[in-house]
Image (cartoon, rainbow, N blue to C red; front, top):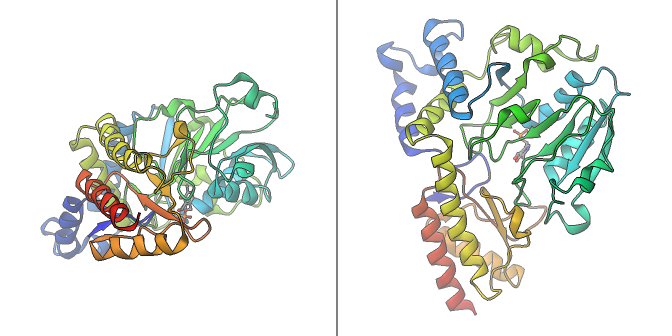
Length: 367
Ligand code: PLP
């Protein structure tokens, strides 16, 4: 089947086949990759190679640490203010462009004084104010904020930043949740103080969360009540081996990073993602209103494509018939309904082409 799930999501077949062999006998060791000590030399090589491949893919500058953590992106909603604010009285700024940014804002409010700079809620999260417009953020940002937080791609609403806002806080710190567009295109990491991403969309199974953090932020002064598991410096000093890491997940992420490099790196991945998204949005926009994508064109996500049909009944029929033809997990998120096609890196062009052909056929039969 072609799996259009939002996450856990489809992974490259070549990676899964390789993992299948290593699951039983990792490179002739007689042990499964899942049975190996995280302190042994085999796993040491797995995590180091995964990190260096990720650094190469994203051109991560030397002054940044890469952490492989647990707890999902949701844990980072609190870990970020716990590490970057010295007390709950410290201010931090949030731009909210969808449900995930809103969750990050609300969770952070427990550990910092969270200021809402801009929200897309009045427009049902279908757009983003132009971050290059000098009036947009400057007026609302708090110059004392410790950081400005964004969700780079809203998985549910299908809204993606194409240019990033300039933080106007004294530290110039921008923090981004990149869970659902991580490694989908080149990113200038140096523009960010911290990037975090759950793995289960573009790069691996659930259970691994990547944090890329500028080293000067690892000052060792998190808020006093910060649990060790949320203390970035502890994990950075221990090279992500402070406690037992999510070994199997890290191993799969490593295979995916190697595969992305083999495909030509993130510029080539972006080209492929643009081709797929272009075909799908083209089919929606060319349907004379039979399919409607509510998101403002300039900020449409390359990864998550939400659309609606005339009625809920028709949407249900669409999802059911598509599943019968081997295109699964197309139902929109329960909070917004409609249809959503998640077309992450591992979704082949053939999957999108099949969906587009089905959409045309479905329209002809149900117009
Ligand atoms: N942020 C974004 C953009 C997401 O899409 C998700 C999950 O889908 C999360 C955060 C939460 O991630 P997790 O379930 O790994 O905690």
